[in-house]
Image (cartoon, rainbow, N blue to C red; front, side, top):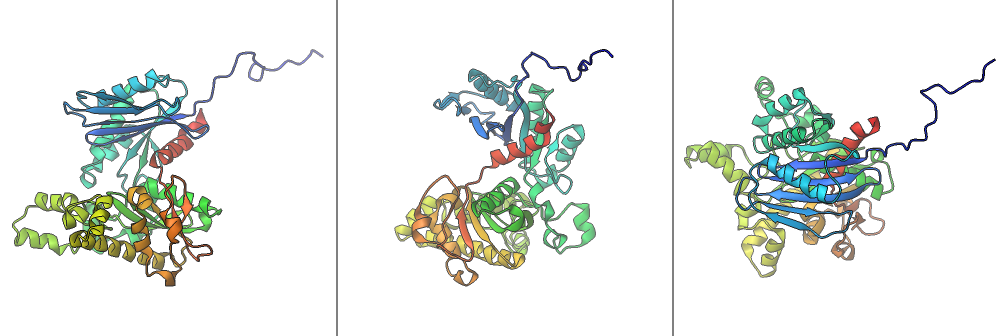
Length: 421
């Protein structure tokens, strides 16, 4: 009997195996800006981050930080004509740090896409069909989806061989039951025009709800969380066992909480009144409610730090704006407590939620009967790590959990395509 030999498929090789591809580039393309981060999902490290802003203007600015190398931030000024030029400038900066887009370690590019409608419930590899559907959703996201599409198409042209993955802001909220997602209007009209509650900030709500469960030492499936994403845009969500069951934003990001420049919830008849009595056009009202309302409409400032400074100096208009902001926030906490039935934690996140201790304190003041309270000393502590600010032994945990939407997009992107390389 002849000696056996390993088949060619299993024969050992002296050649070194290529390093696994674990890097993901995350792009967030706005109408006149591109934010980016390069992450290594092998160890969760950030390799580089940057921003190109004022695209299309003579005073464009690129700010790039090589995080892995520990170098300082580099800046470039001068005209950046379009998104193609912006991404090429980004690629040059990455290449200067040895992190070029041609690296075999780059496994995919993940893109933030604001609106995915009902169809996109998971991160999705982009092809012509996906591009066409994102374009079809432009009427319900006219400010965001066109810019997101531009970023995707530009990245595809730069690296046509690389998977491009769309991660949708709306996806986390697609688990809402119909009772929460439907508006009480004629069903045929709603379906014809795709009118329903979609919700936004979904990558943040997904990340923070899971991080809150980790902070409590429990699995996401075991925890009910109210997430309060409070930035210039603001939204709340009710998350039961890791799944969103309600959220404050609706067809657009205008519904819900009082925001920096957006009104949030309002009687829709106000619009008819402004058209009939005020002589305002639909575009005028759109601008009013999205850009001239919220905190800036109430007191002229949308920076919570400035509002608090004015309150400390006795400014009554600033105090009224703050009180209206807190009143709406408190209403949503109570409503989502009722929706969930049992609440294990309330988590504050985003710029205001993470940094404005007076907002957190005021939001839960008077809700002690629901088990909610903050400890003054804990609440005053500033830091970049998730932390509890409720008193020891509190029935409901109150937490500050810094959001990380880029990491969430990278995680979802890598989970989809990384295991195949």
